[in-house]
Image 1 (cartoon, rainbow, N blue to C red):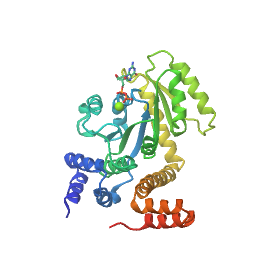
Image 2 (image 1 turned 30 degrees about the vertical axis):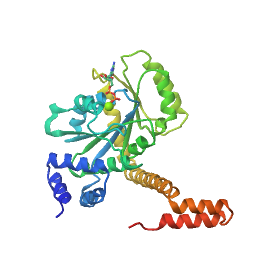
Image 3 (image 1 turned 45 degrees about the vertical axis):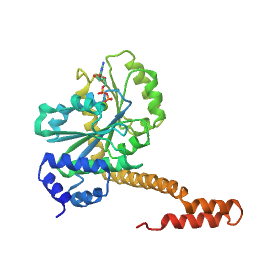
Image 4 (image 1 turned 90 degrees about the vertical axis):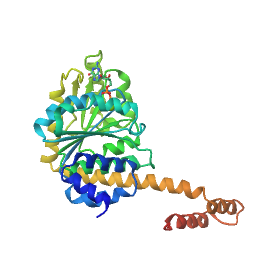
Length: 316
Ligand SMILES: Nc1nc2c(ncn2[C@@H]2O[C@H](COP(=O)(O)OP(=O)(O)O)[C@@H](O)[C@H]2O)c(=O)[nH]1
Ligand SMILES: [Mg+2]
């Protein structure tokens, strides 16, 4: 048996150090991902996944920490994965998150891990997907993924979630940014955190107005919380549970998962193809063909066909 398979079996049997090591391997997004995926595939699909997204500093980590005691009443184990594409794993900022979200008092019922990736485009979503599936296979029945809500990478990560919670703060700017980043559409539940600061009600009205334009049925709830004191966090947990119940009762859980998986695969392929095209266009072959094309010795169709064949050629 390979070393990876041994680690996977140990993690499946409940070893936290083995799971931690596998998550580090997943983070590197290397060829071992497939081996891990193969070994866990039969055990995946039991966890509910909540994605928590929003601008940096909105209070996502603090809120997750405050949600943990509520979540632990309904789930016997909670895994938290903080995904940040900009920070390497041992970065100070992430360390700050770890300190805030240590969950130490919950002992063996909480597993917290942050991950980043400087690998290829699309690598982070892929690594996060494997990390999430690993936690799922190892029996973590609720998985919370924290990610910044600012770019495509983050939205890809959010596609891994069954329920997406969007965290905003009081202030006009946030709602406008959320609309721009596609968060208004991506969110299943919204929360205005830092409700202890002025302007929470105005932001709520503003957000409800943006959401009403989308005509979603049922309209997503907009909660308010002060994560640092715990105010409103119980109500927020109830809203998240209600969304999960709705997904299960309406039969949407499976179809939504299939749809999200399809989006993830499609996006990953697109990213990889773009990367391959860049590499191809930098090659000697492409340079010489472009020269011939410019001189009129090849027409566009011939040039493109030849380069497409090169793209499809298996590399050894
Ligand atoms: N006043 C106030 N501060 C908060 C609240 N929630 C979080 N914070 C603070 O906001 C800062 C950023 O929080 P953090 O959870 O790291 O945000 P993240 O970047 O979204 O994960 C920290 O200093 C928190 O203590 C809140 O409800 N009210
Ligand atoms: Mg954070």
